[in-house]
Image 1 (spheres, helix red, strand yellow):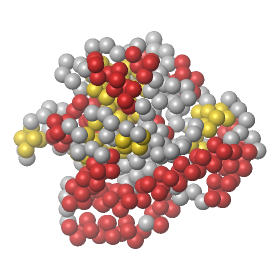
Image 2 (cartoon, protein in one colour):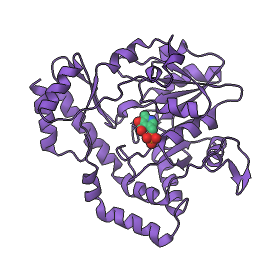
Image 3 (tube, helix red, strand yellow):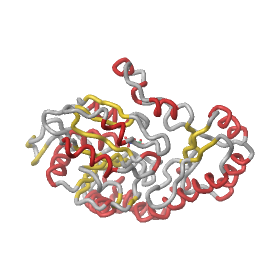
Image 4 (cartoon, protein in one colour):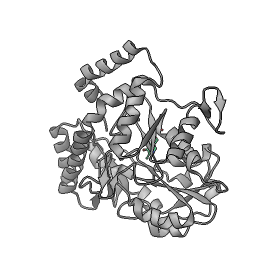
Amino acid sequence: MNDLSRAINEQRAALEGAWSRVLDSSYVVMGPEHAAFEAELAALVGATDAVAVASGTDALELMLRATMPGGRDVVVTAANAGGYTTTAARRGGFTVRYVDVDAQTHLVDPDALLKVLDERVGVVVVTHLYGRAADVAAVRAVCEPRGIRVVEDCAQAIGARTDEGPVGSRADAAAFSFYPTKNLGALGDGGAVTTSSEEIAARLRALRQYGWDAKYRIGVDGGRNSRLDEAQAAVLRTRMPLLSAQNEARRGIIQRYAAVGASGVRVLPAEGAGHVGHLAVVVADDRARLREHLESHLIRTDVHYPVPDHLQDAFRDEYADVSLPVTASLADRILTLPCFAEMTPDEVDRVCGALASY
Ligand SMILES: Cc1ncc(COP(=O)(O)O)c(C=O)c1O
């Protein structure tokens, strides 16, 4: 599904240069690389501030804590995005409510959203799933008149842009993950939140470091230690200039799969700057048969994601009365094909050939 060694080998000299800069400076957390990375990320997404943290899940949790309006406690999200928002919201002490997704885009359905909003809902999380920029404006139009904040989960969509601007700048705040297989991946864990609100940025900076608003002074309750290492910041700075070309390569791979297609299989399209090709997902009438066919051609597949959040064993009892028919039906039919920027043309051809012979 992925081969991290290829990017590491191609970028070896630059990555060694980045490590060396860190060793030379002797700053290991929150030093010059970290500061420069935050500034570069904010510029990339068109936000005034970026606050780096230790992982994407931490970014989601701290973002929810920093944006939840007083007196409210419910986070609304789709249930098909791998459980990260659910984990983060529950860790933040919030109640999670789910909304169904659109059958074509697999993204939050603004019409379905209307049915789950009430005065307890404080934040709606819009996930740009598989690399596709969601319609944040439509969600804001529903939420803002009700005093509900909208935030983005950009973990799978860094670099995606629409007519309204890049993802990460279109809501109150946005979370990013730099897990190694992400389009912009670290050599370890990392995450960040972007925002153009000074107040939210200040809360995030306090929350990521014990709640401090000044050294050894806890001004914000609910803080933790979630810092991005200087070494990871240096790696991310080395890789950020490559992002746009790599996104283009990923998109191109998905477009090849879509052009070939297969009977009983719908390849989710990845066209234009609004999609960064994070995952090549297809919807198959008979997933097990497609998977077996691809495996017989030595092509690995995966499922993103097999169990919707509200059906996860750890808390399914709480959601016994929740029905998300589109989410549930897609979970049984989706399949992810290999897609990463360093795939060779031969490998892409092999996947296309296997699809064609299905
Ligand atoms: C959509 C989405 N949100 C959040 C995360 C969480 O990021 P992390 O693994 O860095 O905690 C991920 C990836 O892992 C993700 O794909």
